[in-house]
Image 1 (tube, rainbow, N blue to C red):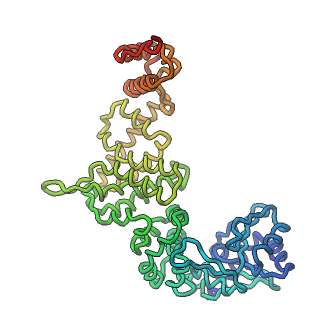
Image 2: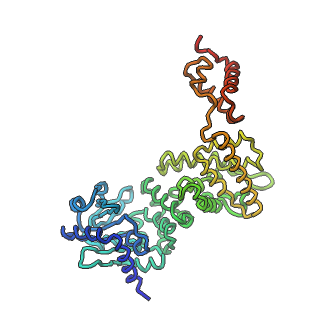
Length: 484
């Protein structure tokens, strides 16, 4: 049986063949300038796994100013935005490269920004990497490529286990975000985590507070958008890390939902996330908005929990409370305003379908459902269907059939009435002309009145809408009021 290290070296070199001329020219440029260059980190790991992409990371003995001079001659374009941290980026063809000076970085106890010290050897650089599977390198400026694996990253990759190159507590003290990275690799690569690493995370979870909200958000998003986010979320919650940046999630473990009595709300939430992901093809593929909405749709339950006389629990208006909590949490994590609005809207609407009963909604109620969901209608379809986690097959089939009927009615009404562009039968200019008034609040009130009629009764036509407008204005004593 081949040695894992030898096999890893063979696989990595084979994967690099696709970028052979480009990498050879880059290595030659650094060698001619008197510097060493090595492919490092994730690209080496991915090359061994057969998933090497077009974003390549390198480590070099060259200082940033040296890399700028080399890459300006070698690449099509370069970026110096990471120079303070030792990183210069360049693009050649469709390949992006980042070259970082050998370094170690660590955090002061009260600092949100890493302190960077440049080093002189690849060995020192690799010892400061997050995990052994990311601490392998291919030295490219020698007579032939040299595979460097000081911490048995190849063996850990073969065993699919996450360990740190140095003591886990020291590693996480240097950069606490590495604790979240462990959850991301569990979700992305289906790895297990070494017990020492888990113990260190449990002890040091509170140190995550020194990391900026933006970096936490980005790492959390990568975990959530991974192939198996449940696995990463389980690690975040069980280790205590989630409590440091998303406390609403572990708090769900304290609640038992009488409507899903076979699961606590936390387990129900993870199942909803799994089921939403299974329906993501309706949204064009992996979708951050629907994954966040699935994860957060019930976070209002702990705050709205009430005991029902005679036994049982209720969570009245948890969708309203949850929508407000969603906005607050996503703002604190520095998500963009569009994502915040979309996710909180879905949380607010996620129970709306349950008023549909067995199809008793009028056409006006269906129109309102469409109007309130707006551009998120397909997302709401996915979330609503995912929210059915009952183990009772008869009940599940009945809910699915009922929602099928609602979707069919939506399709039919859309075809009849162009509901994606619901507007009153009269526009603002026509309202002013008919009533003989100038731009004012009254025009908006009249518009809203006609829109409500449109929702209730469907298209009225200009003649009927005019009659209704005049009758409304007469009651309000508005007609021609501004002409007097």
